Image (spheres, one colour):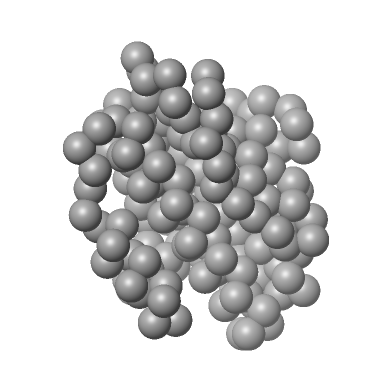
Length: 157
């Protein structure tokens, strides 16, 4: 946990170039994914990851519904820097990312994670999310597989 906190402190220092900014955000998402997966295993709870076009948040499955993690300083909702966006693939199929739903919206639908982090250590379905900025040739991909492996890696557009 100390190494994760150190990583977040290091990541808080933003790079000056768009490429460094994309790398920083991809590494942050990958580290948070690791933390959420470890918590799912240790606590025996199911977590979800919900993407919107320019933000993401972790959810907890509680009382038969997905709930945002309120009050969690590390797994809180994260906004991407201005002009940065996600491009999501689920099992190698492009997915249109919609705006996130609040648990208290009038339609009473609970939030819907696109990715599940299971207490068994699995990540399902397999996914990859590309972090991109208009006019920047370099992007980063954060991906996760069914066996719980995940990584952030550079990708040229």
